[in-house]
View 1 (cartoon, helix red, strand yellow):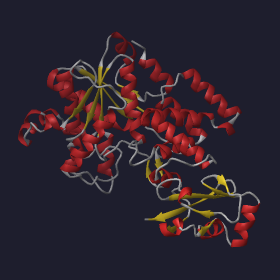
View 2 (spheres, one colour):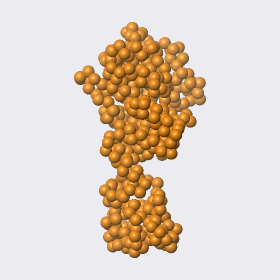
View 3 (cartoon, helix red, strand yellow):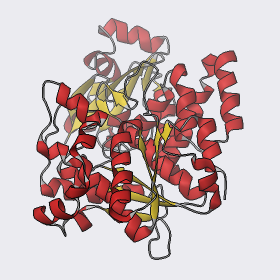
View 4 (cartoon, one colour):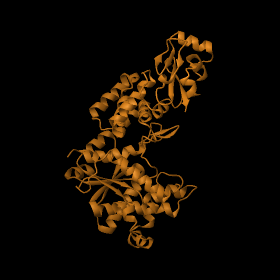
Amino acid sequence: MSDIYADFTTRGLIHQTTDDLAPWLQEKPRTIYIGFDPTADSMHVGHLMQVMTLRRFQQAGHRPIALVGGATGMIGDPSGKSQERNLLTVDQLHANTEALKSQMQNFIGFDEAGGGAVLANNLDWMNEFSFLEFLRDIGKNFPVNVMLGKDSVKSRLEGESGLSYTEFSYMLLQAYDFVHLHQKYDCELQVGGSDQWGNITAGIDLGRRMHGASLYGMTCPLLTKSDGTKMGKTESGAVWLAPERTSPYKFYQYWINVADDDAGQCLRFLTELPMEEIVELDQSRETEPHLRSSQKRLAEVLTQIVHRQDGLDAARKATDIFFGSEIQDLSDEQLLDIFADVPSVEISRDVLTGGQFNIVDALVDSGLCSSRGDARRSIEQGGGYVNNRRVESLDTNLSEQDLASDTVIVLRRGKKKYALVRVAN
């Protein structure tokens, strides 16, 4: 059994612990859990910290529990929030829960029947309680003055929006999760982000009050950029782990474009690369920053973990295309994803089959050239391309043979100016 605490310490992954966990984790395999609220039908980059933490524990010989909050998701965690969340419908929560459970199996090998990792949903046991039963059996063990002292509660009570009784109750539900998992699976350690300290210690206290249990807690730093903003946020929204929401190409490109100041932390927090390699990459950023070796390695490793080898291959191919590789055998969806931000012109299929769309007109109509004279000069100087193949003649007419996918032809002027010809069926 490897020394996971030492690895966590070296990587800077420990923010707070309730006890000295180093010798405790070395004594024998332990069962640990991390909770995931199903607020969407996919995990995003922010969840990578949590799911990779579970994966590290499993690889170190411990038993992880991934808990999807089908019950707690109905309320919403007030921690780190300035105002109350909009509540999701039961059907939305169920669909999100099933989606998250499916995604997690890409990271962790679950085998509850064989004594291995567990994938759980707290709705399974919370459904068994009536409101009165929960107040009588669980609520009586919660001193209100202790709850009011938690930072997550205090900050909301002091804010303008206040805190509803619904969100105030979140702490009780999450605390009972820890107790239930301890009773059923002998789970002794809860891990979460640094904003979860209050919820974790509430569970530890509840376990002691109800069963005299000795439970432990650990928090990890939140995944943020050097400027303090959340990692995984872009102008177009969150970077998701589901390929339907964020394609492997865009996922790969996100990490390629990570700032130098953030690359080292991401390599330590999110990858399983040995520290020796990470230190070498740190040195490369100092001596050869133009190579962007850290970002390339980060993009490669994370895309392979999240989207498997096929996703990484597709992302690399898409990246090569954007930098001039010949375009063929791609789908409309892939091309539109790669060239999402370039101008386009739409023509009818009849125009294409009739060979009536000259390359000069195509360059002008698509916006790549300002005039026919400009387009002719560009072609004569070797700067006109169809699907990244150079156009040799001004007399070239586009045809169905030029389709790079079912309905898309890619035009290029010079090195990096692209446009699309969209064919209407």
